[in-house]
Image (cartoon, rainbow, N blue to C red; front, side, top):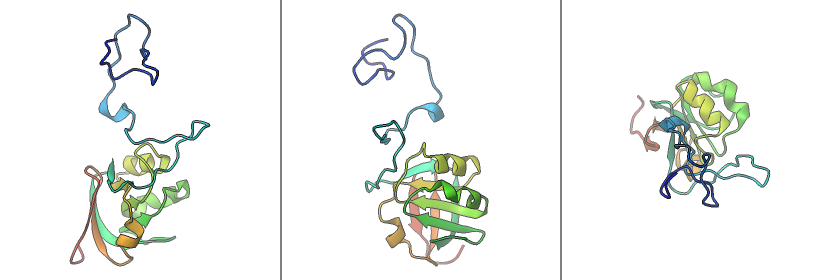
Length: 150
């Protein structure tokens, strides 16, 4: 591979066998730029950096809900992407988390089920109180408060 190849290890060695052309990966399979691993190689929640990241699922609008047992059609706003929230995904209009990353398990499940998801949105729990109507864009990572119900 060339010195400018994106498929190089941290030590600068080629990620492909010597002389083999680098494999092209589709955009959805490329590693996330904002990924943090534990010393055992597990994905860790990433605190918000002030820059939200869209994790997919399209766009949705709904009333903010925080806590357990959300009603159908709400936007669930949480501090962390907890896998125990997976059964709630089919009833959500959106999901916003203060921590997490695109390859987080819950973010992947939400994206697969078409739930607009934004991760790494610093201050989301305090910034979007229950009852507020918000629009979630899972492509751009934007969360916008609305003036009136959808």
